[in-house]
Length: 111
Image 1 (cartoon, rainbow, N blue to C red):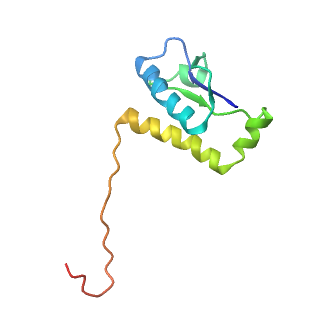
Image 2 (cartoon, rainbow, N blue to C red):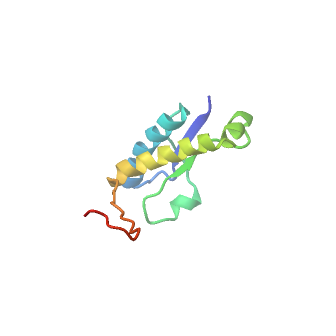
């Protein structure tokens, strides 16, 4: 099966970055079936130079033929996205907001 590498980008990562990584990573693994090969750290400019908490997720690689084929499937992309969504919902304590919507049709609504 494929490898998922979810990286906190620099060795001196903030505690928030580490917490985000620890929350997102298992959610993505659960949704995609990627093999859990552990979380990685690396010194990438894109997150090293930011002042906010940051992580970089790598969700398969196009130079791997098996992963490239999976990445062409919209259902697999949906699984990757859902893993990220689940993690973000947990990180930020998000709740669904349901709104009742009324449509006026010109007749009596009974209310």
